[in-house]
Length: 377
View 1 (cartoon, rainbow, N blue to C red):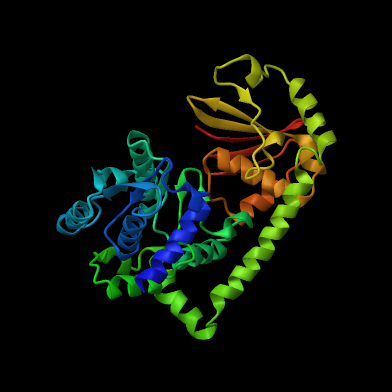
View 2: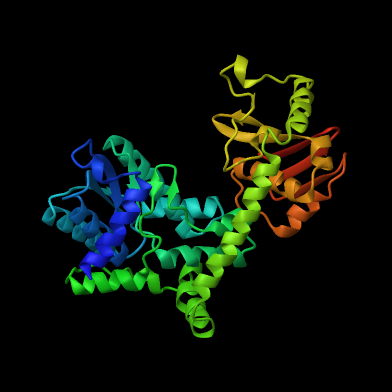
């Protein structure tokens, strides 16, 4: 059983890091592995330690105590990871976060406690990655996590792109266990007598993800035993459609529209392009396949944060509704607004010159020939 788990992890790692058998003995790839002490991360750490004997990887462990549960439990988790790391002769970096500060941030940002903790956690991991000179952050998200994330986004009215679930590679973050189920993980740990910690908060149903895992998934499993395979097929079809739209709206495919957009913004008063100043100004973002409509937006920054997005009004009005929706989504994303109601988006799609829509601090104003999207301060 150890061989099956480690073999699958090895294959995933080789694909994600673009390794092959000829890379043995060459420069090591340094990996910062996020380990909480739970079954998922302990299996990941154990598997990577085994692989490090034959695969050119260097492992550093990072364990983070968010101090959001009882001290004895959270401190015990971190102690366990440190001891496990010492047992495997692996360097371990331990971080103690301010639980009260995380709770305050959740209230101020009007987000859930999990979201606030996740933001601080990844920020801490990224700082550690740089300090430890690691190429990637490795997390233990598994197959069950992948489908739970899809279900959560699906029932929250997520965008088509968001339904692709967790990405195996996202910037400097890699997730080599997305095709390994939670049952495979538990079986591996039990077969090899590997101990792990239980997080009591995993059973608290005030968290949406826990509700999905503990209540919805068992019903789906009982009603549609192969629901994961079926959902994966649907997601693949959606991704094909999204890829097709990307090709249709790439700058080369809409060259005339893009040239019109460039000309429009050049005519605007007080417009300073990114090419002739380093101060906080209106900027033309570079093309990115993940944010394929960026060339049609102008982003204004203040104090290193995007504060306003401008879209050529004529281009917006003449675009297909699917393109309009994605333009708005891109704008909301860069303003740091990740959840916008379907009703508000529909109102914005119907905007005409001289009209505006408001949602709390978010404002979408069709002013003259320009669509302005900004957060009221």
